[in-house]
Length: 146
Image (cartoon, rainbow, N blue to C red; front, side):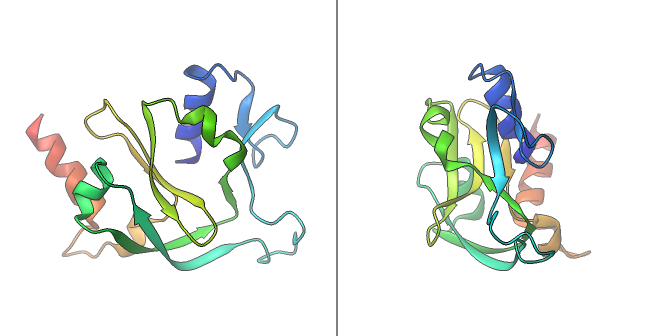
């Protein structure tokens, strides 16, 4: 999701220097930034564990999961920078899932794409050898239809 948002900022929104502060701390447009810059101790800024993701109505993500919310595992330090949320809200880029308690972007998608979804959580952590995570399963089914 992180690089999908950076690419969208650069090539659709015209922010040619857009980046994640993880990769370039001097970027003009820090689309992703460290969650808690005041706590730079190792592990202190890490978002780890299960979090509830609220899914937006009339999105592909919600149609895939067929639920109002899902609980998924996280392990990351950088979050979408909500200072840019209005610029991304252009009708094509959709924030389809959020963590309501802190207003964190969890899933994104492109409105006019058959399966462009990015997620902040790790769906691979919910997959089992006998049962793929719902998002992966849906992607494979979509590919088979093409």
